[in-house]
Length: 229
Picture 1 (cartoon, rainbow, N blue to C red):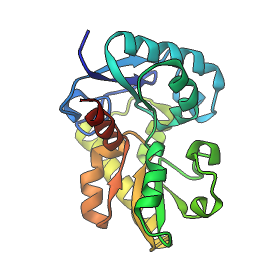
Picture 2 (cartoon, rainbow, N blue to C red; picture 1 turned 90 degrees about the vertical axis):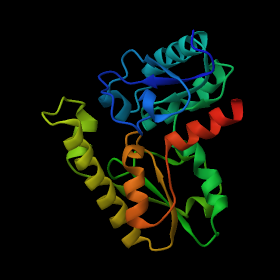
Picture 3 (cartoon, helix red, strand yellow; picture 1 turned 120 degrees about the vertical axis):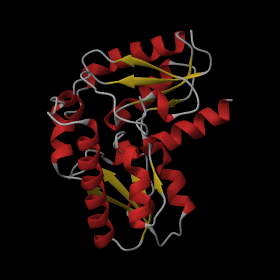
C-alpha cells in the first residue's frame, strides 16, 4: 500500500503522456496509483454508455483499498459518473476539471466569460455535466474545440507512428489554435478551463501564448491533495 496517494482511474488502451499528464507519476510531488476501468474504451465514453459505471465504481473502490486518499481520472468524459463514484467511496472524488467551473465563474467579473476547451466541437458536456443551474452563469460559459490530428488519436486511441515529442508538438499546436479561435470569438474570456486530461501537458505554453489563467485537472488534483496533507 502507498500512503496518501492520489488514485487515478484510467481508460482502456491508454498511453502515458509526459509530465503534466494526470496519470504520469512525474507530474506531482505526491505519489499516484492507477486502476484501469474494465471496458472503458473511448467510443463508449463518447457515447455516454452508462453500463461502464459499475466497473468504474469497482475500480475506484480498489484504489481506496490500495491507499488512495482521493480519486481522479485520466479522462474528462468520466464526469458523467461523478455522483455515482462519489457516493460509493469515502474519499474526495475529482473525475473532471469541470468541478472547478463554479469557482472560476465567481473568481471573475460577472461580465466575463469562462472558456471551456475540449477535444472537439460540439462540446460533449451538457448542462448536467457542467453542474450549473443558474441561467446567468450558464450564459457565461463558452466552448472551444481543438480539432486536429490529436482529436483523432483521442477518439480512436489507435497507436500513432510518431514519437512522444512529435505527439506533444501536435497537441500543443492544436490546443493553442483552439484557444486562439475561442478567444477571437469571445474576447471577454477571463480564463480557460481545459476539459481534456492531456491538455495540461501543454498548459505552460498555452498560458504564455494567450496571457490568460489556464486551469485543468492537475490543478484540481493539487488543490485536493494539498487539503489532505
